[in-house]
Image (cartoon, rainbow, N blue to C red; front, side):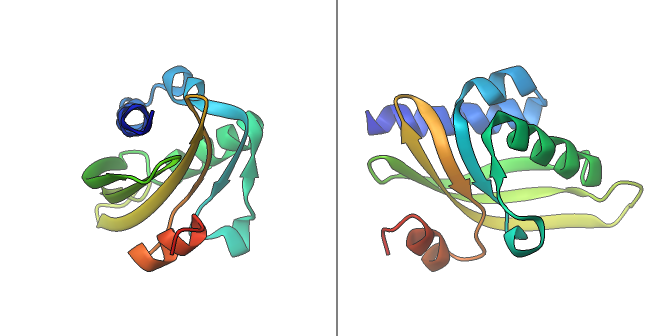
Length: 130
């Protein structure tokens, strides 16, 4: 089951990079909770409607943002990714290189939660592992 979660995490990143909303949302539970690193300002995003708001806002700000997976760990019902995001702000030539630690929680083949974190320690604590 956990190798399945690793494969699903890769599929989710691939769908994001292709901007394939239908494939992306199909990998998520209808009650998903998403916490960006700006959760204190934005609040969390809940459900597919919240996920769509996150998708539109994020890609509106960073239209060419792409994720590369540097490392992906199987932690049972959680996968932990060390990712590198890169792109440019809308209307900007200044490059953005964005290292991320991202725990994702999976249930029945669907992502039910993820959080973007600045450090591995923060990601493990957020997932209730560290």
